[in-house]
Image 1 (tube, rainbow, N blue to C red):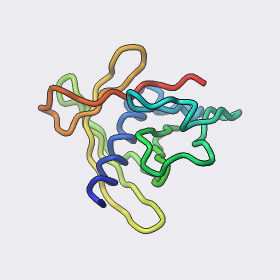
Image 2: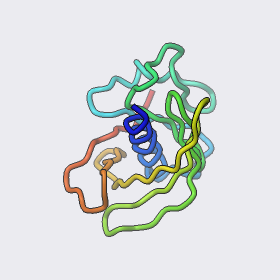
Image 3: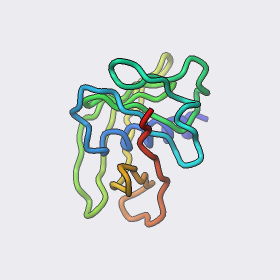
Length: 133
């Protein structure tokens, strides 16, 4: 369970920061393909926040500045590096009971989406679309 949670947290964080809006002061939400943005986010004056009853393991995240948030964790970007067309991100993530370093890989997709990979050499990834509420 912890590995799945850390993988999900890392996936979400990397996706958000890679969006090109990493230094923006507006919170932007991203959700995995098949996830309805309106089910996980609500619009605020500062961008978006998680909906009040969002599933703790919803495949979605919010990025603002160098911070990536999932429904259950907050991650700080510590390092990023290009690996060809894919970018590697190293985060430090914490929730109410644990702390974990997380490394994720992704590249920009179409229409502002992010494609998350398990490694720099993987060829099939998971798509996270930018949510425009």
